[in-house]
Length: 196
Ligand SMILES: CC(C)(COP(=O)(O)OP(=O)(O)OC[C@H]1O[C@@H](n2cnc3c(N)ncnc32)[C@H](O)[C@@H]1OP(=O)(O)O)[C@@H](O)C(=O)NCCC(=O)NCCS
Image (cartoon, rainbow, N blue to C red; front, side, top):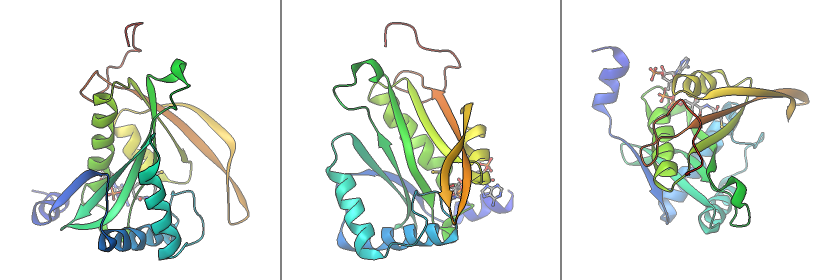
């Protein structure tokens, strides 16, 4: 057993789709989010937001019909999250696809496999909801995330040279998609036919 596997087996890892969060969970999730932002994060925000603003964000996310929130827990404590964003009802033409966004794990909970679990859980949910493509985009500076997404079969289809502004610097962004097997969340490797 390697070191990562040994650590993983000693800790309780979990990812759940949440519809409600307790005050204690919201506070811990806000703390995890600010820790990720401070470390250089990925979660859109560049500056730490503080508990009140982040709690408002998560409460709001839980109210949006097209948005689902997934929380990663380490030994029962929220340490990261991701969101699945589905197309609005008026976008029939793109109803087959969905977007994975705002994925991060707090620095103090990294390296034990939670992000991989989080992304796979979102894929399974997207596939179960009938989506056949999962899209995502990421700053090209997020090297760990890029390695993770590529190892999970995401296909890099384009790079936006003016994707984000971080601390006065323009950062490019990489755009990815993955085709999902109906109901399973595994890649088919082939584009869907007209039946989706
Ligand atoms: C990317 C991120 C989510 C990974 O979280 P994590 O929980 O540490 O990831 P995991 O433990 O599930 O590891 C995933 C893979 O990345 C690898 N990895 C983890 N940390 C690494 C590091 N510092 N350097 C290189 N590889 C690393 C692991 O080896 C693992 O690969 P494996 O399953 O083949 O062994 C986390 O680093 C993060 O939150 N980064 C900032 C936010 C971000 O970039 N979000 C994505 C864009 S929205």
